[in-house]
Image (cartoon, rainbow, N blue to C red; front, side):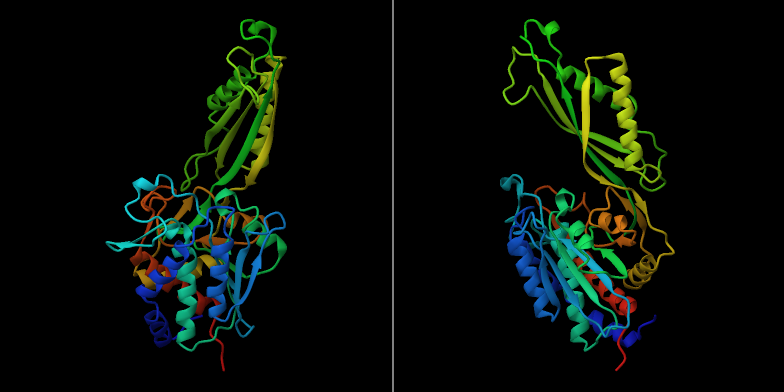
Length: 406
C-alpha cells in the first residue's frame, strides 16, 4: 500500500518537536514506579480520550490500582489493525543528588529531554504514538484499520500484570504489533529468552563450633553455584546477533530468618537470571539444571536442593519476511534516509506475551539503554530521535492501516 506523497508530507509536517516535548513532559512529571502506575495511567487514558479513542483501564484482579491504559482509534473497519505499546512504569530515581535536573521535571538540555521515564519509555513509547495519531487527525485523514495504543504496567518486573494480562484477556486482537522500545532506531527482531529461578537449599542446624554435626546449606549452595559456573550456565550455540547465553547470580540469603555466627545455616536461597539465545528453550535449560542437582546429590547424600521458576520467556527471532517487519523497515528508511539496522536485545519485554500467543511483533523506537542512562541517574532521550520515531509511527499507520475511502 503506497500513500500519496502529498498526504505524507502533510501528516509529517504536523509532527512538531514542541508538542512531543510537551506530551512527554506531562507523563514524566507523574512518578510511576512499578506498582504505582494509577495516576499516570489515568493521565494517559485522558490523553487518548482527547484524541477520540475508545479508552479503558485494564487491570489484573491482583493489581486493581495499576490499570493498563488501552486506547483504540477506530478506523473504517476494512483495514489491518496495528497495536503500538510502551510501558508506563519506571524504576526509582536512584541517588537524587546525582541528577543534574529534577528527576520528574522533563527539562530540555542540549537537545535532550531529561527525567525518569523519558526514554524508558514514556517519550518514545507513549508520547510519540499519541502525537503521530494527532498528526493524522489534524490532516483530516481517517484510516481503514484500527490504531491501538497500550500503555502497560509492571513491565519492569516481567509484565505479568501488564501486557501479559492484556494479551491473555483478549481485550484487543491486532494484526500487527509494534513494541515502541528504546532500540536506538534499530529494528529489534531477535530477542533473548529470560529464565529466572530461585534455588532453595536445606541443611541441618548445629552449633557453629561443631559444624560436623550439622549440614551447612550455604556451603551446599556454593557447590551448586560453582557447578553452574563450571558449565558456563547451560549448553548453547552463540547467536550471530544476540551472541552468548548469559547467567547472573542476582541475590543470595543464608542462615534463615535469624542468622547467627555460631549456628550452622540450615537454609540458603539464591536467585539466578539466565538469558537464553535461539536454539535454547526454557524447558531444556530447566532440565539441565535438574540434572546438575541430581549429579551433585549422587556424590553428596546430604544435599537437599530444589528450585522454582519465577519467570520463563522463550527466546525468539522474527523473519524479515513478516509484514510488520517490512512495514517498519520501509517507513523507517523513508524518514531516516537509510535502511534501519536489524538487531537484537536482551529480552522481548512486552513482546514476550505476544510471542507466547503465537503472534508476531517487532521492537522499534528512539533512545538507547546504555547511552540514555536507563535505570541510572540522568536518564534522557534525544529529541531528534523522538521526532523521527513519531514520524515513522505515523507512516506505519498510514501505510499499514490504509486510508479510508469516502
